[in-house]
Image 1: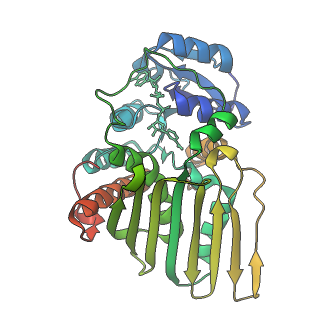
Image 2: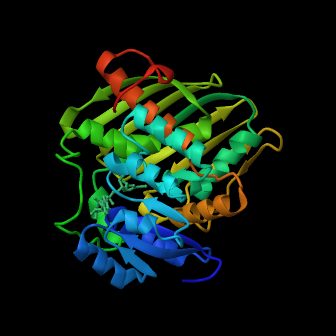
Length: 355
Ligand SMILES: NC(=O)c1ccc[n+]([C@@H]2O[C@H](COP(=O)([O-])OP(=O)(O)OC[C@H]3O[C@@H](n4cnc5c(N)ncnc54)[C@H](O)[C@@H]3O)[C@@H](O)[C@H]2O)c1
């Protein structure tokens, strides 16, 4: 155990912990990978050997009872997020809960209430906010481009996704003893894709364009592809068009165009596992110039943990998604799903139930 570092306990030693949170915590100079907790003995033991946390636990309550744990990373299946995040808050821990924050409006509201009651920091794992290109675009939109007129955002997974990610990510270890929700969460592809990918799209669109008030969605499922086109109404009157497609028969294709009264921002976002900052160009009529940042440090998962540490230690406002943002994404996903069923506009304030 190292003095003065922010001590993180990661719940779940599965895919995202192995590819993102374990290496991110180990590479950070501000965070310590203090504990790994997983009910699957073989997986936990292998990960403990590789990543050398100070300690490990086979039981979540044991990790929560360890007073050295400052924050818990909830890196388990979507259906488990909210109850386990609430237990961490009740144990006095700060929380980074993976996206989507929850699978239904009511449980997401319960986590927002628990966060307020606890006074602890909750971040939701919408790590794209830490992409230096997207962060630059956000700040430029906020500070430079005036009134927002239109926002287009597309998130198209590649038909070659796994060929690419299997090559560039660490080899993922699996366990037959891994604890998973009953049934097969992937059986309903629409729901699975909206939860897994739609949550990212909606959060980034909100991050750039502000709160979303209503959605009208259409879905095409031709040729085994799931292609959603969304009309979106932003609270500030900006018109929105979003595209969620899994998968396009080409490379990863994600990006945005934002038009304001005093400028514009365009961005190309890379497959997240390249850890390469989005290529962003921001134009301002003030100087008739394009501004193009180069984001050297795009280790979004490490930046996310360090943001959590700073917010917990100093009270600073995190760049990351709060529990309120997580709830807004859940409302957005439910609105998207209901709109596909009805063909009508759905107001986010009116939705209830599960995605
Ligand atoms: N941020 C991103 O870009 C991103 C990318 C991929 C996955 N995710 C999210 O990460 C989450 C985890 O996905 P995954 O694929 O890593 O899951 P996984 O099923 O591979 O791993 C979860 C692990 O948690 C353990 N576990 C579950 N409940 C437990 C409990 N109560 N006590 C102890 N151990 C427990 C399981 O045994 C399993 O090993 C999902 O919500 C997913 O949406 C996020």
